[in-house]
Length: 261
Length: 253
Image (cartoon, rainbow over the protein chains, first blue to last red):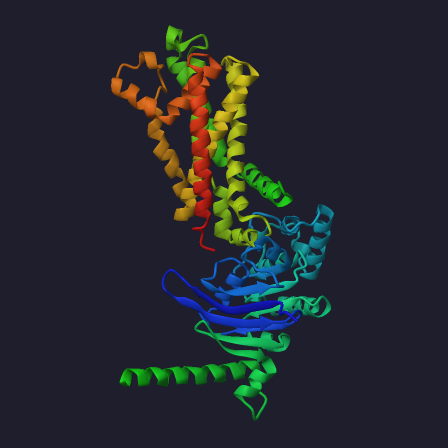
């Protein structure tokens, strides 16, 4: 079976010389809940931007649902939903109007768009904010709206780049309830990047660890924990910290040797 | 045209209606010029060189030109606001073709400029501006005005996208402003005494829109100005749209 997301030897560097991605290879099956973890600046957001066609890759290949995004950008956009790190909201528009417009942009008819907007307003508990301009929303509600906008067109694959930053615990719980429900009942493939490892631990089943643009681990979360600490059970957070610490020490001694030579 | 494209153009127009300060300012200035020029130096219109339309019809094209200049100074407001808020990224991730994200707000700016041109034509007609060929004259003026406005908006948006600063849209207006004075703006060619100014005016594209409009309004110019003007501004508007589209690649997502 062909993977829903297939990445082969992906490279990306920025004009300032930073090599953000160094030959990334990944495969994610349909309906899986995948978490991409790694320190700040490791290349997580760059990978999401490349895969969602926000920026171009330098070399390598990737397909999404078997489609090549370079030749079928519009087709890709119809099947993916993206909630990036930063809010992408028109502050001058009302909550309901933004959701309806988003639906229309993705090809829903006006009645379908209105219906979907109502569903999302209810799901994300934005009823009282419906007629408020986005600029008048609290930080947490802006975040809810931002995530709701990514779901308007019933995406088949969802890219969530640190989606819960700025949400209060209730909003966060509500958000994950919606996402896990979509993942389980509609087999929506989830590609998550997060620094909240408890969230990845609780909801995701597979993960990859990216450090300095390279994948250092790819597999199930359970196997990662076992690999780091075979003797006792540890949370993903602790396993991650331990692994990164070991990695840092290895790099440090490598560099030291290099200097001595 | 597909639904997404229409929606985005509609959105651009609605945004301009909600924040109309730039086009209204441009319109106000044009109206002011029309009234002041006519009241101040309208008396010279009795000279033969101004034709039957008098000074009002002679000076009217300048108000149309300055209207588009005023609008283009605020061109790309919506695009800039979307980029600042991050909403542009959301639009970028929609199935809409990416070229329309740049062209839609530009078209909205041009349509708004055209709307105010029609308003100006109505006011001009009330004040006594003549239209040599009736509705055909109005249509000709609108076509020239559309191309001129699209030229200015395209370059303004392109520069704004490349510099990432909304204020830089005004660079085009400032660059074009001197061209107004190096043309047959205030006097017909027959009354311009400086040979160098006459020579420069031949190479100045503004001359062709001015004289083209004068041909349509009072018949004081030759038809060739109108046709050459059409060719010039069809070319410049095409170049400016290409410039704006190529500038879209410079946007930092």
